[in-house]
Each structure stands twice: as structure tokens, then as C-alpha cells.
Amino acid sequence: MNRAPEARDLACVAAQLGRPPHPLRRVVARCPWGAPAVVEDLPYDAAGRPLPTLFWATCPALVAAVAALESAGGVSRFETLVAGDAQLAQSLRAATRYERRRRRRLAALCEAPPRDGGASLATGIAGVGRPAALKCLHAHAAHALARPGYLLGARILEAAAPVYPARRCCTSDWE
Figure 1 (spheres, rainbow, N blue to C red):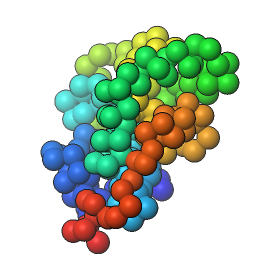
Figure 2 (figure 1 turned 135 degrees about the vertical axis):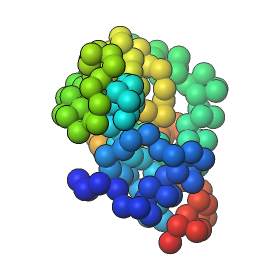
Figure 3 (figure 1 turned 30 degrees about the vertical axis):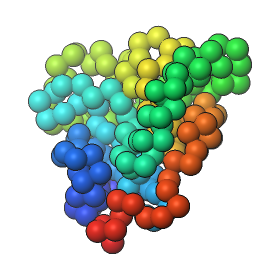
Figure 4 (figure 1 turned 90 degrees about the vertical axis):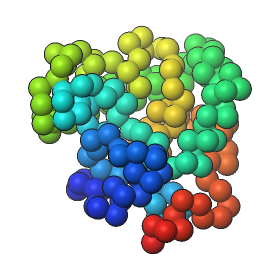
């Protein structure tokens, strides 16, 4: 899926978020019913303000499931897991390198020059400056859905399961 989002996808994302979406490049993952679940954001908005989260979870059920995990101490739990597991740490480093490369490529598509001089392009997932630190489990879950094989994100999704409801939710008007 490399083309720009269609109008109906943009409308669905706006309804999911309850606001217009950040400038986005494409829908990168969909829920089981075909609605957008994760989008790829451009790294800067139309005024050049940084948007350091590359993959943004839009599905309300997914967002709620990961929020419950976060509020139960999930960030510190997963930071501890990463610190003690070389495979998870390597997965995080690889995902961080990917996001940095991708945001640099996408910066060329932004309308205005970056207000931060490009500084946010060097940050990690969700704008984290220190690669081993975690900030937002939503961004890691979204990365795993956008790029299957991201081990840390997959573990976060497993811990937050189920991330989609058994019945259709926000897609009822979308079809």
C-alpha cells in the first residue's frame, strides 16, 4: 500500500480519532473488517512542526487495549523486559533504525521546512531520544502491525490482546 489514502479512509480515520488526522502518507494496517487500524504519518505538519510518531494507531479498540496495558505499568514492564532480553533489544534497535530512515525519506514530501531543523528525524519510536527507553506502547504496537516481525511490538500486542473486538465497532458506517 504505497499510494496516498483515499477520501473514505481519511474520513474513517478522522471519525476514529475524533479530529482531523495528522498529515499522513498511507494506511499501513487494517482491522479484521477492513477499516484503517494504523496509519503512517508524515514527519512534519503543514507548518513544519515535528510529528515524531511514524506509525499511529487509529482503531479505537486497538488504542483502548494498549492504553489498558500502559495504565497497568506496561511501559516500565516492557523496558525491564528489553533490558534483560538481547533479542527484544535487537528488535527495538532495528525498528528504531527503520523509523529514522523512513522519516528522513518522508520528510521530502512535507510542505514546509522543518521548524526543528530536522532534529526529530534522529529520534526513536514515538520521538524517544534514548533508544532503549520506551515512551508509548501504542507506537510500538502500531509498528508491529505496520511491519510484521517486530518482536517487541508483537509482544506488546500479545499482552494487550484482544486488540480488536469480536464484532464490528467503528466500521459500521465505513463500508
